[in-house]
Length: 370
Image (cartoon, rainbow, N blue to C red; front, side, top):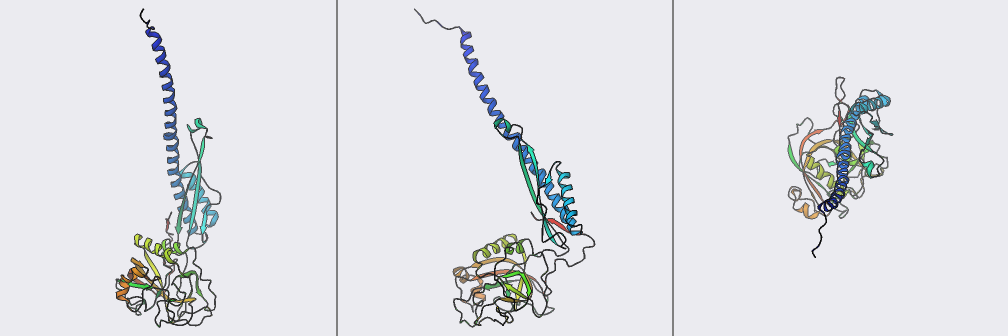
C-alpha cells in the first residue's frame, strides 16, 4: 500500500510560516540599518552645523574683544552667532574663555557650543531618544604683527654658528643657510671654549622677560613653550639696551625640543630666535658668567631676534659628527648631548617684538586657529 501524500495546500501553509519568520528578521535588521543611517547621519550633520556655529561665535567674540566691547559684548556676540547658525544651539557653561583676557589688545578666545540631537530609531533599542553634540573653536584677535612665532632657544652672539649674527648696525641681512650648535659643557667644565656653560641648555622662559640681574630664576620650562612656537607669543618682548635680561629655562629639554623642532621643519615655520650676548650673561647673583667661567648661567642678555626657518636637525653624538657642525664648527667636540641645526636666516631685529605695533585703520584682524 503506497504512502498517502498530504494535500498541496498543507505544504504551502508551512512555507507561509517560514516566510513570516524570515520577513520579521529582515524587518528587525532594516530597523537597525535605518537607525545607523538616519540617527548617525543626523548626528553628523548636526555636528557640521555646530562647528559652523562655533567658528562664527569664536570669530565674533574675538572681534568684540578686539574692538573693546568687553566680556559682556563678547558673550552676547557668541550667543547670537551660535543660535543664528544652528537654531537651538547654546554656548556651553563656562565658555567663552579668554587668554590672556578680553580687554587685552591681543589674545585668543575659545567657544564651545552644545545642542541635543533627537535619535528617532535608537529608542527601539533602549536609547533615551536624544544625544548631546558638541563643537568648539578658538580665534585670535590683535593688531598688526600679533602673535609672532618665537622659538625660546637662544642663539649665542658671534659663537656656536657660522653666520654673522647679530649683523653689523644698519647692515642688511642677506638670506643664507646658517649652521648652529648647542651642547651642554658639564662633561668637560675646564674647556676654555665650551659649547655652553655648566648645566646650561639654551632654552628661555619668556614669562620672565626683562628682569633684574638679581632676580633668582626657577629655571623651569614653561608649559607655553610649544604655544609660543606654533601659535605665537601673546605679548610684547621689548629690547631695552644695554641690558634685557631673561631667565633661562630648564636643564635638558632633550627629545621634547627635538620633536618641536621637527614639527617646525614640517610646517616650514618662520621663527624668531632670541640672540644672547655671552659676554654679559649673568649667574644667579647677577655676576658675569661667560663661557669657560666656573659658574652656571641664570639669565641671558638679549640683544635682538634672528628670524630663521629651520631646515634640518641632527641630535646626539653620532648624528652631530656626521652633520655640518663637525665641518663648519670644528672647535667643538661632539657628545651625546650635541644638537646641530641648519636654518635659513632671513631677518634680524634689535627692537624687540611688539604684537600691537602698526596701524590697523580701525580694523582688528581676527582668525581661527582651532
